[in-house]
Length: 161
Ligand SMILES: Nc1nc2c(ncn2[C@@H]2O[C@H](COP(=O)(O)OP(=O)(O)OP(=O)(O)O)[C@@H](O)[C@H]2O)c(=O)[nH]1
Ligand SMILES: [Mg+2]
Image (cartoon, rainbow, N blue to C red; front, side):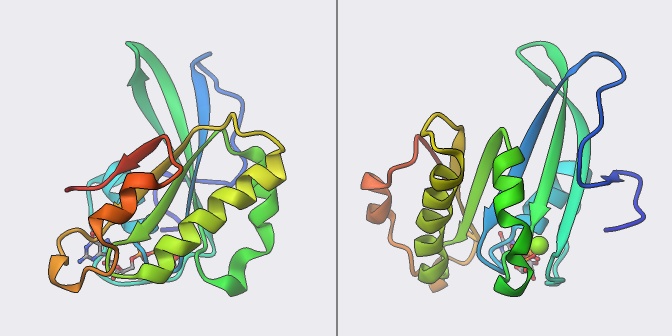
């Protein structure tokens, strides 16, 4: 992804237009589809290969409540060997998207661990966090049953049910 027009350095810049910037951090276990989701959102492309991320950052313009705004999206590493920066981006994020794969129960457990880590680093529960269940096209390989979602301690859960 490096070298593409929509790739930026990992720390966001001061907005030139005065539009509000929101720092969004993608979190989740390795291979759950954080980069695929980010690419879909940013450039409407779906990479069908797994190229483990170290850290990639993107900036895109959106409208929020009719106001122009920028999203700085930080696509992080799920693989344990790349996680040294975790505390740092958990401190910097204004909103978090925690992803798991419905085909990987361990990634669902890790989603809860990510959330606890955010609370631990930030010392507050007042942080927007969205839980996303990905790979819903792979229903036949589903390991995370839908009823697990009834009591998950997330305010917003996104999954094609
Ligand atoms: N079937 C299916 N495959 C997906 C989906 N999303 C991602 N994948 C595939 O899953 C693999 C891993 O996707 P990535 O987006 O690289 O995963 P990641 O979470 O960024 O992984 P790390 O960067 O290692 O943390 C790739 O082969 C993707 O094509 C999905 O919704 N359905
Ligand atoms: Mg990735």
